[in-house]
Length: 311
Image 1 (cartoon, rainbow, N blue to C red):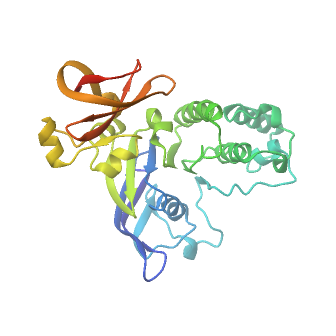
Image 2 (cartoon, helix red, strand yellow):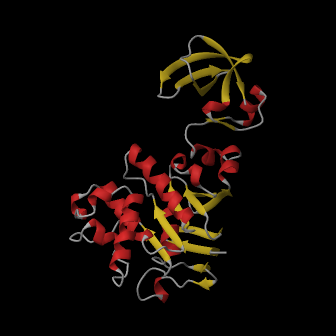
Image 3 (cartoon, rainbow, N blue to C red):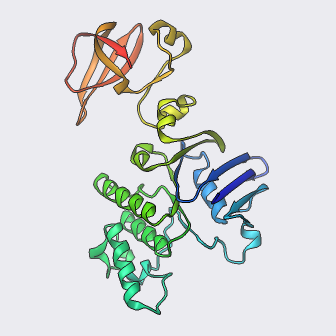
């Protein structure tokens, strides 16, 4: 076991307790996401693991050793861990290459240069090697910080919303290279996100937090297909939520259906199309059936009256 969090309690103030009896396990080489709405405790949990905050009770074990937090460390942080927070802490008057190589030894300069070049390729910044961070965008600075953290091959990498400053094209490019690199190097990764769609193909585990409580901890497929409640289901994007009474009306067994799980059918429930809008690779449609408004996705524009079924 690489990381164990046992019976953790943490309070921002005497009046506000965030984590109570919190437990989490992480095996070596695994990639997990911390997901939840803003303020649920994702960033705080990463700071606790890395040793930037003291907890009230409980313990955090890393590679069999009990971590001490700021009270036990003169310099905050833990060896064999790296944390990229949303404050990147780059050296403003050193080049991108020098920032990435900050933690690398100068004994073998050729090897250092090779490692820096490899990491700049991973984060898509090869052409910016000699640029100063102050001349970069926020998204570019974020990628420099990620490359610097990877340079020492940490046993555990903590990333707080690593794609938040990136446009869609850069996000797609970075996430594939990043996740392939950590898997190749057997680096364990905990990534916080409020957009699970960005990372779900690369995850081994999803940990859902709500106000410091662990709501669900499962493999991605299980979390998606059998969300614990509507809060979890909504983290995957737009979803149709049904009350128990509405489930009985439609004769369905689940309380949550994603738009693609409601389909046009020759037999099914009569529905009136309220709106049909082009949305790129599908049409976004709002229907009403049995006084329930539903969102479904189709490949063709909808109109008039349709029959629908649930899959």
